[in-house]
Image (cartoon, rainbow, N blue to C red; front, top):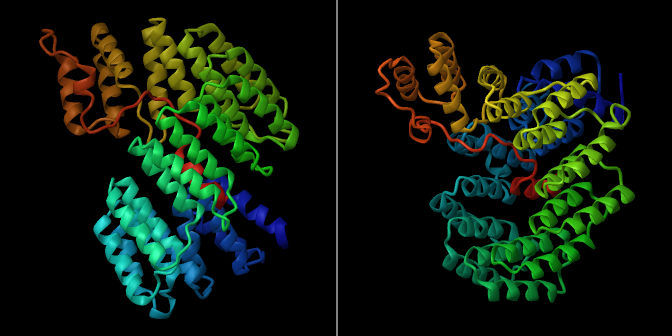
Length: 477
């Protein structure tokens, strides 16, 4: 039997490797072993699962807490479950849950959660209806609900409604928060209104009730980047840097921002400060290596990789994404021999190539016209890929053209079936591709952009390490 932080770490250690599997059997076993079952412990795990975007498992734990442990729900618990249901099961299920909540638990926090659910799916009409209900109940005295609706108006281009809403806040004496100013910065940037950005910046900096945080200045930097004022954007990043306060994920974000501005010198300078001021974890190495590769500096990226690898497994765990970024660079440069040597190094260090490793291998082989191996590598990448990933359509077209040219109908049909099974192409497109590979007269042509576009979304096949969502969630981690 364990206590305190040890039990927290141990339970998450059991949950972490499960991927998308159900965590209920692990929770049941935890109880059977006589381990701590206090409510606060599970609430912390729900928060952690949400921070890692493992929403289905967080919802499972929330339901398990009430159904199996009979913990009474607070309004905070209701708000969190409402948010999770909307993300996992959809808005209709979230609405049904909200309607089932006892009246005494339908407080401001719960209504804000419902408002946020509608904002997430950009349903202006339903969000406005919730806000009106909140006004009736007297729940319209918090900046939080106004910020949610302001954010929705910004994302849907309803800029005039933003002005009306901010006037309502002023009439009701509701002070603007940092997030309020950030939303207006983004809105003015979307309208290419430099004067508006300058005005918001001036107002925020002169607001004596605010203690501006690093995220305000990175939002201002984003705004200036979008309107092409790069010198001002750089000045905002410098101000943000002064407010880091020893948080690694802030360093990560700033590294990507300096890279966006093309300031390699600042990237290298900030990296040295990062290492000096705190322990750098995997995400920090991802931010730095990808930044260097955007500058096409493979040599320095390799040195940073060596630093990272030297800490495996003593202080860091092996994260295949980190070597994959270098594999992607080798693939794009056509460095096939170096690619294969590096893969062997990964395996010797205990790393396991994943779908992106195989995809980069396939792309490298395609560039060298080693088509037989390229097809095999592409099929392996697709077979073990995650559900949201889509390979580049031109690379798929090249594989199919090769198989047709070789007359290998069996493998061509397996390739097409695999694309369908992995939901990369629709049933209709499967039929078209099968007719293409079986057409011996050459009358059917393969247009990669048209024929492969049906029922699937394509990108470059690349994955990225940091997004707007990451920034939005930093303060919840």
